[in-house]
Length: 276
Image (tube, rainbow, N blue to C red; front, side, top):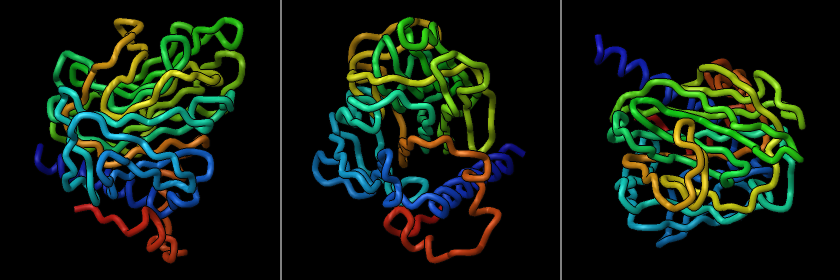
């Protein structure tokens, strides 16, 4: 039964990824960044969106076969990817009312009782993150500036996962305003809405952004502020999407419901990525 469930879970993630590749051509993403982690050259991690926002490898993560195409294997010690400040993520623009960040990942030891950061942006005053801790994957958001929003202490949502399993996790900020409102911050896992909590606009934050570790400052659900590099992730990250749109359930499942416009498939992700 466990093997059957694992296979069903893998099929679900494959369908989600097919959906995103069908519905969202990275080259059509003009307000955000997409890191497919397929074409890394030296320390440079290309941005597969319409923008050219190159990220940089730190440590020595290994390029390996992922769920589809290539992935980065992080050692949990000193590997990561640093995403420079971007007007589309955190600097100069904003506030943002809508955002979706989705990561496809496989954690080597999800039961570890230390934070393992998959993605984070911002700092201790305002920011967003995704991380694994003690058998759960978390998404978080906060804005502790009372002159802006006072989304304080913030919202953290979580769902259980196992080790050595592929998952697609996403948070969606949907229609945020300058008032903290219920239901504005959503957590999605493997194409399913897990739950929603309070959320608001997210404002500019010039602290750093990263994949696979905490770069500088962030905030966790139980320990509060984190103010130094660390929280390294052990496992694989296949891709990361950062989009200033609030994806819907229809967006996540569109390819499963339609066989039209198949020409988009050949353009999506630079080459059609197939689930193994």
